[in-house]
Every structure is written in structure tokens, then in C-alpha cells.
Image 1 (spheres, rainbow, N blue to C red):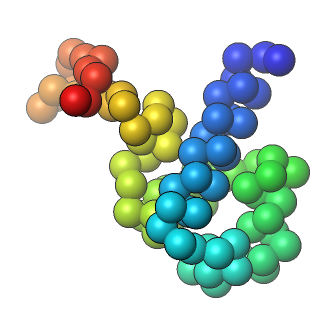
Image 2 (image 1 turned 120 degrees about the vertical axis):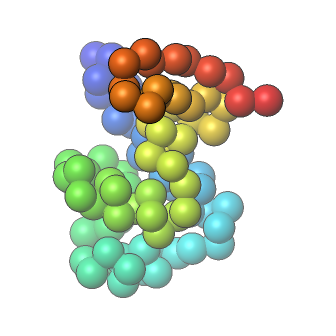
Length: 92
């Protein structure tokens, strides 16, 4: 599997995991995103692409940082005040 495809699959799994941990149904997510439940199901299962705005909306609904959905809960990217130095940091 291509690295990008694997990353996208991992992101979808993280979204699903956080959604379930929060006790949110696919129907609830669909309502919050103003899409049908079937559309959300397809989005979460990988049958349709997640557009950037929807991805941002999902992170907001789930109340998690986008970086957590991308990298997992154990890692985050921290940017300097002027976005000059990217630091990879493990959260303890």
C-alpha cells in the first residue's frame, strides 16, 4: 500500500476511534457536518475523499487538534512563533 493511502486510512481509523470514544454516532456526525448519514459513512469508510474543510469540521466536532488526527494522540507538531522551526515532540 502506498504511504499516502496508508496515512489516510490511519486518519480515518483515528476519526472513528475518537468518535466512538466520545459516544457520537455516525448519524450525529452527519447532522453536525450537514451531510447525510450515508455520506458520513462513506467518508469514514474511505469510499469518498475527506475535503480539507470537512476534515477541519470533524476535528472541531470531535474537539481534537488536527495534528492528533494526523499523527495520533502520542505525537504532535509544534511550530515556533514564526513557523521557522518544526519540532517533532512526543507528548508524555
